[in-house]
Length: 71
Image (tube, rainbow, N blue to C red):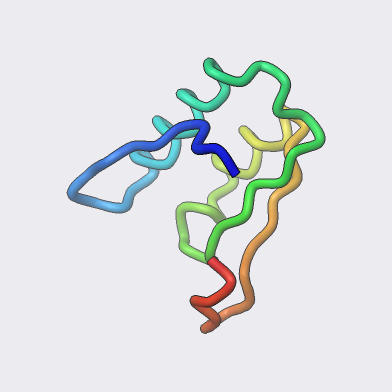
């Protein structure tokens, strides 16, 4: 339930998402076996994002399409 990392930007782009991931990976070195849950935004479906999670041993979880209550 703790916030590990966050980033703020005027645009929801890959730089925003990857900056957040980099901060999380620096702060928490043992994220393997964790699950990252997101909506189905294009940033989270990007191979760069998915590869970064996989390299850290993180399982990706996405909400169902059109179900904002899952976020």
